[in-house]
Length: 234
Image (cartoon, rainbow, N blue to C red; front, side):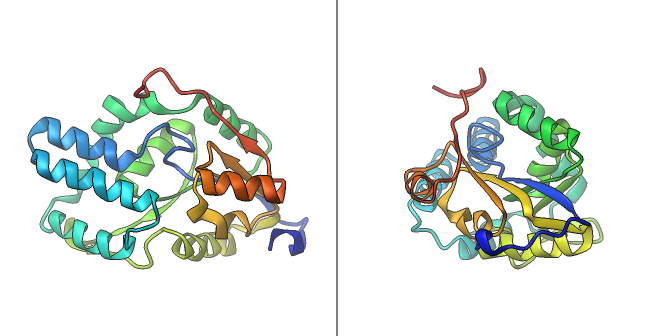
């Protein structure tokens, strides 16, 4: 638990950010799915299935590892550089306008204090890295896809960066970057990130889902509600 952490003053403080609904106002996977539908890459039925899976995920009823393993098979044989270029174009077309201005200011503030800043997301690096670059963030911990000779195999590198998998990759990261968790921050909207919130000395609920809001109020964690950016739906 965060309350039992011992501070290491020789290490740097970290500031770790979830991506979807924390740094940007919508789910990046849903945005990507809608863009593929608009281009004719997926059918209306596939789009609806994708959105239904997202709702199942939000309800805690989706086996995310099994879903990810199955979904990534579609990309077997895809040139990685082409996928990265496509995702980068999508970022500039549809995701960049979804960045919360308050998130931009938070990131800038942590960078100005010399903190180690990283995005920690279940999305793939193809969606996360353009956002990190836009925010001036050097580090991105995310789900990795297996690549051989520049081509995706359709397999995912495990553990995926979700729930305990996020903890695994963050612990790997702090071990090599000399980060003091007792002085570190974690920002997220989702109760699925509770293990990470409990890992740091400064947990912050951002635009929290109902379950996380309840936990944050009970534990007296700070709660931040960001204003919708101009590009957000609704």
